[in-house]
Amino acid sequence: MSQPTAEEIRAASYVGFDSITRQIEKKLLKRGFQFNVIVVGQTGLGKSTLINTIFASHLIDSKGRLEADEPVRQTTDIHPVSHVISENGVKLRLNIVDTPGYGDQINNENCWDPIVKYIKDQHSAYLRKELTAMRDKYIVDTRIHCALFFINPTGHSLRPIDIIVMKKLSEVVNVVPVIAKSDSLTPEERDNFKSKIRAELVYHNIRLYPFDTDEFDEDELKHNDSIRSMIPFAVVGSERNVIIDGKPVRGRKNRWGVVNVEDERHCEFVYLRDFLLRTHLQDLIETTAQIHYEAFRSKQLLALKEASSAGARPAGSTA
Ligand SMILES: Nc1nc2c(ncn2[C@@H]2O[C@H](COP(=O)(O)OP(=O)(O)OP(=O)(O)O)[C@@H](O)[C@H]2O)c(=O)[nH]1
Ligand SMILES: [Mg+2]
Figure 1: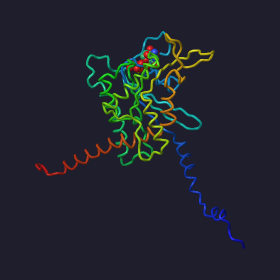
Figure 2: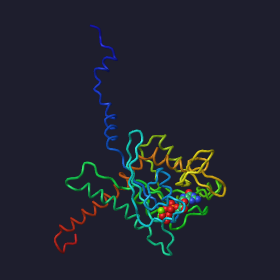
Figure 3: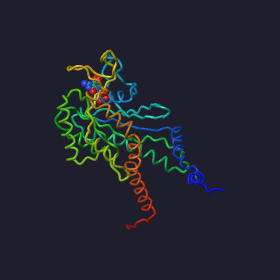
Figure 4: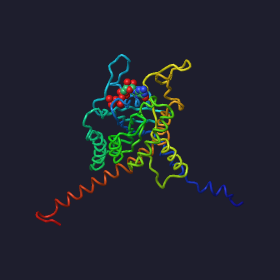
């Protein structure tokens, strides 16, 4: 009998565990994915509009102004909307949390409190579910994976309140800043404003998403650098179609002409959408669990431990 060839030896020792990637994929596809976004910023900057632009259909419709002659809407409470979207068999459950704008009161002190509380409440709910003895196999995840922070397109600088709110938010969630209504700036004004904001963010030591980890390869690190050099994304939102070259596109008419939201030469909406949904969706979810939720969880558990050991001490003991 002839000796087995190297090919035959390889074939005989193949047991097939490399199919685990397909097994995982199948399971994940069945289960689907959950992505939760919150929008934060001053009143009237187009938060509700942008959400409807990113996710195409009118997701935030309960208070939405769908017809031009309807009165101007204003978001008055923290308002989550759930939506299931599906692409090529991949199911994504979206939770989009619209928030009322701030900044129009004389006293804006602590205007960020309800939003930070909302984000922490989701961490707290998740932790409670994790800690129950009979925990669910799959915990419904309402933890916020991304906070889109809206900056007023003044062309000058950030307002002190924006710096405070971004700082507070960045302690609990992935923050992605955007320049709202950027159709009001010329391309030159826009680029100047963007670099001014980036310098201010560095100056105020505001730690924004994305974060690099030592797991990243060269391409991923490079991609994150390019994202950082683009932040804040200058966006334009629209819930309506306008006709350009005979075709309906999502856009706005302004005094300079027509802005096509999806045209990269007009605004950076497409870059933002690609960043959120095409390139960083999984990383936003993972960073939330591994950095923000983990920090919350360990703080809570330590506090719980301290409280229980203090309770166990004999009365009067100070040790
Ligand atoms: N020029 C311009 N106008 C916009 C843009 N996005 C929204 N708007 C308009 O700005 C107005 C306010 O938009 P909303 O989306 O309701 O703003 P909001 O931030 O949700 O406001 P609050 O809920 O009050 O905080 C509406 O009339 C929008 O049509 C934009 O990108 N450019
Ligand atoms: Mg709104």
